[in-house]
Length: 184
Ligand SMILES: Cc1cc2nc3c(=O)[nH]c(=O)nc-3n(C[C@H](O)[C@H](O)[C@H](O)COP(=O)(O)O)c2cc1C
Image (cartoon, rainbow, N blue to C red):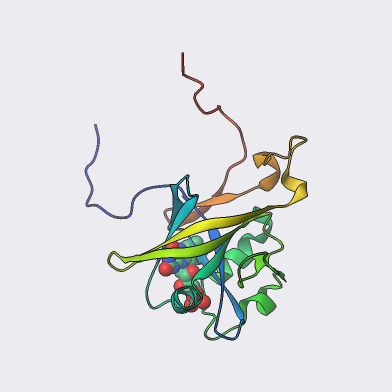
């Protein structure tokens, strides 16, 4: 027996990402987002749901560029904090101690403490409702050597990512299958 509920943004779990952006003078900011996901393989694209009154909204729209950084459980506190305060009022890099590193192709910095970073170009913005969808093309990917296996492939076990799940953060670290394992 199942219980029917009113619809809400119920899809779970959601990745937690730290998105970096810059103002017109190049000063960087960080926003924590959970409404994020892959939307296309070729060209590689991702989507972010951002409320229009977020400070980062105008920065990403203004610069047309952003970086998606994948946090690990080691910086859970900093990740939560970047989602609690606005870059309009505080410098999140200096308060959290997170380290900005120059990106290759875009102005917003990578976050050194995040082992995986995607440099993105904003392709399209679609107003949806309280959130607007930002569609970005991934133009460069950075992977920390420490989270790669001997074949230079991402070793998920070494990353310790976490997800956002209906108001809670959950870690995940165990491989339980391989894509297509049921194919005959
Ligand atoms: C775990 C978590 C997930 C969040 N996800 C989103 C999101 O998907 N979209 C959004 O607009 N705000 C989201 N927020 C809220 C923003 O991160 C928060 O309002 C932040 O302070 C905005 O920063 P800014 O004003 O510097 O841009 C999230 C916050 C947390 C802690």
